[in-house]
Image (cartoon, rainbow, N blue to C red):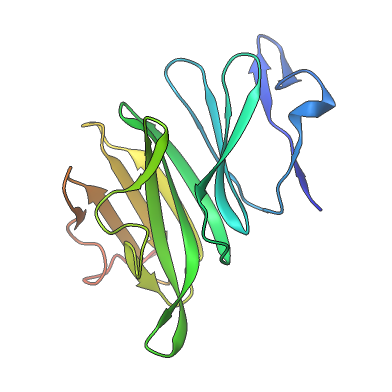
Length: 178
């Protein structure tokens, strides 16, 4: 399988985190997500059947399952908020009788991974016919913002109680390049 290794730039050189081959872990993912906290922790979101998050906290990696559902999961992204890390990913779901792709998200609060609203069941944050990527960021107000594209750009932000569309994003549609 594929292995994922994390390097950090320190002064004048890139170093493996930690400085040994034990830093590399099996990923099965071509595009993992990466974020850093203000305290220096590194977070790597990956999909290996399940959505997972690895965290580097100064001396060791720890890994946990974000969503235990053994589904087809792709393109994970991660951001860090004051409340904890948030992971978003694309997963396959059945809608009526059709296989579709949905964007799901969960946040770690304490030791638990919780849905923000209905973000990790059913159609989650939204359906995409050919979701090509998921991106995740933290707003200036500290809330997670997720974006994905299937030819148009979808943007949702967490208000603290619901996921809201960013004005001008799909279904109205922001068309890349136009």
